[in-house]
Image 1 (cartoon, rainbow, N blue to C red):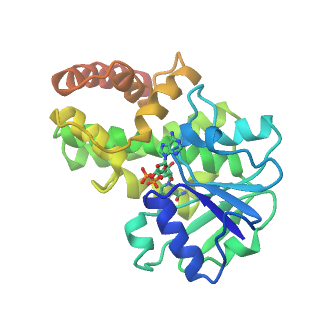
Image 2 (image 1 turned 90 degrees about the vertical axis):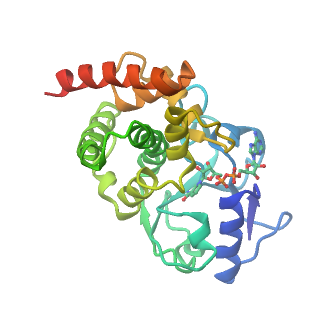
Amino acid sequence: MFKIIGSGSFGTALRHVIKNSGFVISDIDYEFVIPAVPSYAVPDVLDEKEKTIIFVSKGFLENGKLIGEWADKIGLKWAVFAGPHFASELVQNLETCSVLGADSEIPEVMKWKNMNVKFSHHKIEIQLLGALKNIYACFFGIIDGLKLGKNFSASMFSLVIEEINEIFNKLNLESNMIYNQACIGDLILTCTSSQSRNYNEGFNRVMNIKNHQLSEAKHSAIAFIKRFPDQKYICSFVGEVMHNDLKGSDVKSLFDKFYKDYKELKN
Ligand SMILES: NC(=O)c1ccc[n+]([C@@H]2O[C@H](COP(=O)([O-])OP(=O)(O)OC[C@H]3O[C@@H](n4cnc5c(N)ncnc54)[C@H](O)[C@@H]3O)[C@@H](O)[C@H]2O)c1
């Protein structure tokens, strides 16, 4: 009863989880559609107006909107599924925790094996956290590339949480969602691991290493500055790095300026 679009790492891992949980995957007879493609490509792969769509992509669309905001505008019925989910661990049946954001529970998803799915009504909050955390992962990659040390890196986590709260308040969203096990879990997972392509995007830029992998953070960070043009957020700094395609010492120069201003602003 599930159709999955996209055969990359996450689409493949979801196929494994869903089959292993005893559910059917079909391109013809299905109730739910899961587009497992980069967020900026989601509108291009969907024409399933009558189905329920379960979004898993983590990022902003090019105009700075979330996929859910776009879906609401054109009247799609949608849910969102997220959590700390490295595909390589899902295919080994390792346990994790997940959150399903939807208007009501989808029993078939709640039963996915090893995923420990919890339900929430806060769909937009879950999508926004997913999009932001990929940009933060890139930021932490930059910090490690700049060799600023683990103390500094850890100290930035509390600022990230503060900043997410600020962004949520600005948009009138439920900021407590950050403390959901799957949401903070996903943030920590992605921001601290070189398995994350978004972390690597930041790290490799500073090290002047060519990045061959897809990095959603690049698209998302550029989209973020379109949505929040006058803000001095960490995500805005990453957006500027990406927009100007900075590398090596140019990232360092912008970081020094950003951090000086940021400290003044936050103290
Ligand atoms: N919800 C979660 O817990 C979770 C976990 C991991 C990844 N993700 C998200 O899932 C999405 C896919 O991640 P992935 O790791 O599988 O990436 P991937 O690069 O391994 O695979 C991407 C897939 O999308 C297809 N694709 C790429 N660009 C496309 C385009 N322009 N049009 C149509 N199809 C296109 C590729 O052919 C490939 O099949 C990302 O948005 C990622 O953030 C979500």
